[in-house]
Each structure stands twice: as C-alpha cells, then as structure tokens.
Length: 172
Image (cartoon, rainbow, N blue to C red):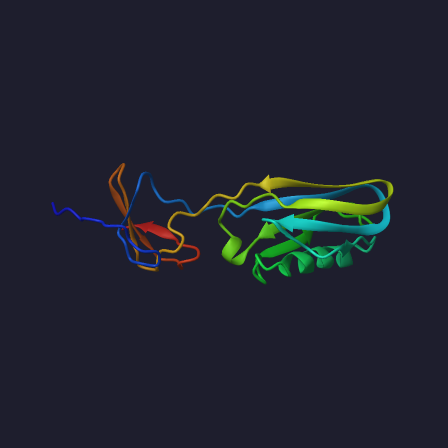
C-alpha cells in the first residue's frame, strides 16, 4: 500500500486534504427577526459583523417591509448582493416574523447573530433576532472540484464533485 504525503495543501488546490471524520455538506444559517408590540412608525437598524445598515423605515405593508430589510442588509459591504434572502414568515400589518436566510458565499457556514437597534414608535414595540437554524460549515470550502479528502478515521477517500464555494464530497 502506498502512502500519500500531504504538505499543507493550498486553498483551491486538489489536496489530498486530511481530516478526522467524513466530510459534511454544511447547513445554511437561518435567523428570525420578530417585530412585536404595536409599532406605529419609526425606524430600526441591523448590524452584521460590525457593519450597520442605514435606517429601515417600519411600515405596516408587509411586502415593503420585507424588501426594505433585504435591501438594507444586501447594501452592507460585508454581505454580497446575493448573500441574504429575507422572506415573510408570519407578518401581519408589519408585526410578526421574517426569516433571514444566508445564501451565496455565506451559505453552508455558521454566521454571527444579526443585532437590531430600534427607534420604533408605538405601544411597546420590540425587535428580537434569534437563530432559527444554526449554520454548520461545509467541509472543504475552497477545495477545487476534483479535490481529494481522506478521512483519517476509517480511512476513506472522498472526491469533491461540487464547487469550491459549496463542495459536494462523494466516496471514491
């Protein structure tokens, strides 16, 4: 049996990469933003990894509110244009929940929790952000298609048939 010597493979290289355990496909993070109380106006800002959005104007028009949140997040310099998708979960007249799903280069990775700063007006308005689905880093992000990964536990050999951003490892 031949031994393969591995010396610090470079990102984007073909490996082989050594790791303990079988590779994982990763899980995309989903966060829930919930607006409570009875807001009647005002604004709020969201912060992701130290970058804060412009003021987002609260509105009772659900579709407008969802679009405003998505546009504000995508305008941040640390979120790619396709980096988040915001969807109405349970909004009724601007009160309820929206889901924020990380996408593109931010998919299949653990993400820090977005935070909110509220200047909403009305009766006890609140904004709470929670982690609905924790993100899990995919194994081998940055590995080129065709790259090899060796599970040092079994040992088993896997080959990336996906992309460098979202590898899909299959047993060889």
